[in-house]
Image 1: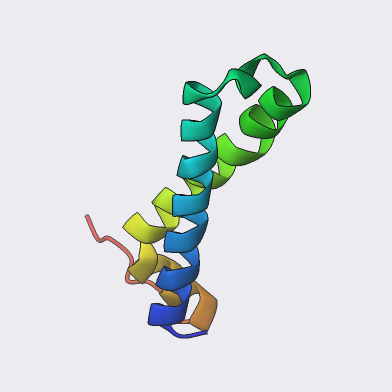
Image 2 (image 1 turned 135 degrees about the vertical axis):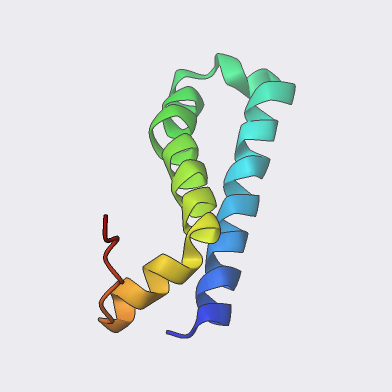
Length: 74
């Protein structure tokens, strides 16, 4: 998987999970316990993970390709 494909997937996951959370906040569905569980146990972790993936994409792509990261020397 190349970097642009990885970023597109992470961006779409981030967008869809943010839309679900926005739906949870602004709709009467927040009173539904099943929808609340989906938000708390699926949408929030995926939103966080996709945000971290977009933020640290360079490091993640190096790890996926198997390249060693330079170690910090003190």
